[in-house]
Image (cartoon, rainbow, N blue to C red; front, side):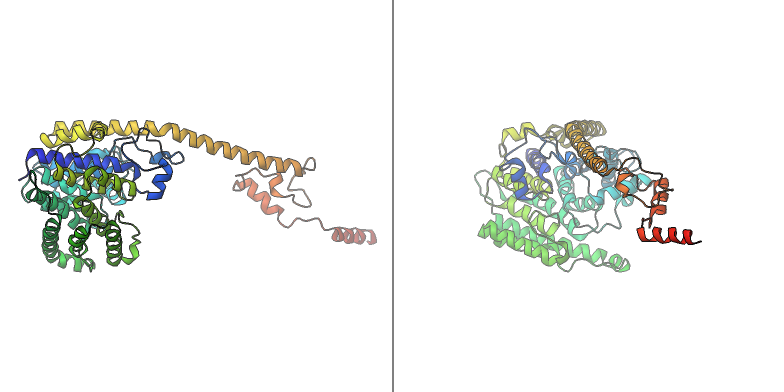
Length: 468
């Protein structure tokens, strides 16, 4: 069992790390330095770092969808009046977060990936009441985003937390990599406290070895249970299980060479799925991103530089920084992270409330705060969106004036009616930009095709008329 203080530290690290990484999710390291004119070192004083992409600007200190999934998963600790399974309560919390509207509107859900979007759409169309109705049956994505929610049952000191962690991943993903990844994080968080203590240095290599063995056992059992269903569906598990991808971690931690770790993890992930296009360690593909997160979390860097390294690498920075922050805080205890980071993390206080007293009332306050934060983020984006739209309008007007100038320079007085003309002047002299598809204009253009004034034909016709 993990003490309440340690559980709060794990949640604190996850929330702060994820909030730090969220603004840079999807970027490459060089792009981050270009946008910031240097390295990211904390929460942004001004979140408007993407002038040409208003929708990508994040409210400083605000987390993304992976953390929203973690906070929604804390609802598994709520006593449900409808006697649903804990995982079904977590699924219902995600529906509440997205709102009851139909269509593509996702309410307060931010930066949702396709698997979650598809799940919400299905949940809305056929609201489920049994736990098994929440599980996805068709999604084959091996994304890392659901992995962070695997911390929830550990934080709540639930029995067999890794089984619940795997079920939480199954809400939107059925790929064995993602499900085993959620188990891995739950197992790591649960076991790491056995290897630390006052004045005791973490034996990272031993932790990694025990983790690999635990994941191997889980994947073996999971494959045995599901192989008949997979065979009926015409689908097979990956040739390389996740535990084999993790098996290099003990030696990588012993070497403590980041360049070697990067090359090893990327090459292993490529071997797992050559067509996936893994090019960096913070890829959303579980064998890459999760292996790197564990390597960085168990490595020799102190908590602050370790998280800063993750956020400056971009990629799946929210989830990976959340994992690193959670494990680092468990390792190093109170004061692991910067006080400025604690003050700037918007979700920290409500996260503690959800952990200490999970209840429908606490969950309602969280949902209200998520809606408020999304509104504030939209207000941050609005001026940039208006400026970008004004820029596009100015560019369109400039182009219209350019074409008008060409028409004026080529004008030869009043043009005759196009139906009566012997030949057709160039369309740019009489057709406004964008009008080419108008039915009336299309008829005129069709009638004008081939109308060319050919002098010798006109002379021949004239002579023929005179001879007759």
